[in-house]
Length: 144
Image (tube, rainbow, N blue to C red; front, top):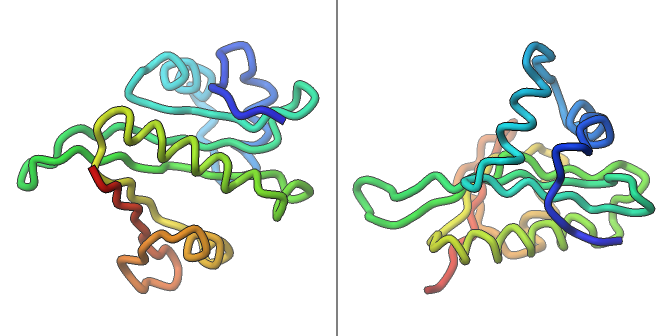
């Protein structure tokens, strides 16, 4: 299994997971996919096993926070196919994402999570910022 950037020609394979993650607006889906894959402000990585995408992470460099003067990244999605969960893949995807965030000079990474993923995010050392049970917010701060 390898973790690497998703490529434009992997749309069909990646789309299965994107749809598995949640609702997808189908109009212009492929165009949005290509735009994000080619945009250096995004990190769109996949866990690839036997030429199949079995998990993915999608993060974005949000740029500098106006008041704080520090760069922030946002995790849009982290998803692993159910049959591959609890095997360390999500942790590897998060590790690669965190390293990318640091490499672009980000001070922290923020995201909202599902109820089912709270335990995982707390286990990897992220800080829970809100206690909204439906969409709790988490953060990883990077010491620079």
